[in-house]
Amino acid sequence: MTDGTSAPAIQETPTRRLPATRHYRGVLRFPAIRQLLRFTGVGVICTAASLGLYALLRPWLGAQLANAVALVLTSLLNTALNRRLTFKIAGGQRRTRDHLNGLVVIAVALVITGSSLGVLHWFNPDATVGDELVATTLSGFLATAVRFSMLRHWIFRRARHR
Image (cartoon, rainbow, N blue to C red; front, side, top):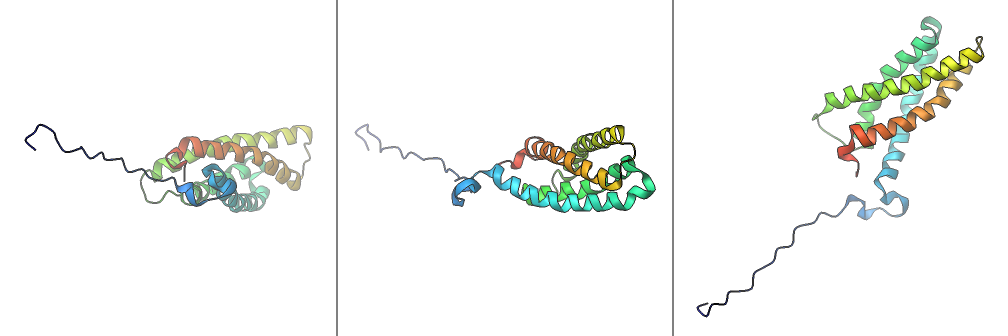
């Protein structure tokens, strides 16, 4: 190539990773929908465990303390299951920090469900354990929505698109 012209430069196109959603169809192509479905399954398991613990502990600890103990005990299970199943995070990196942040999320849930018990007992001082379970379950729906949002956008934001 002595005539001053050079061979055409080969343009490398950057390797682009296709999104993981490529093989999903319909609403499942949205990561948030898939995560919400998995989160719901985890929630059913943890809610059943929490309600069972609450009903077991309520006679000895009272409503507020039984609610707090049940939520704190099931929060570790909840964070571990959501970490692995909902947001597909494996391995030990950031596990401790994820669980500590999960305690903040559970504290928010505790404020919501504890407030519902407080309101219930304010309106009905003679509420039964069944009434308390209904109140904590209904307020648990709000707590669950808040929990999903906090997990997805704060604690596990690194895995938001899985």
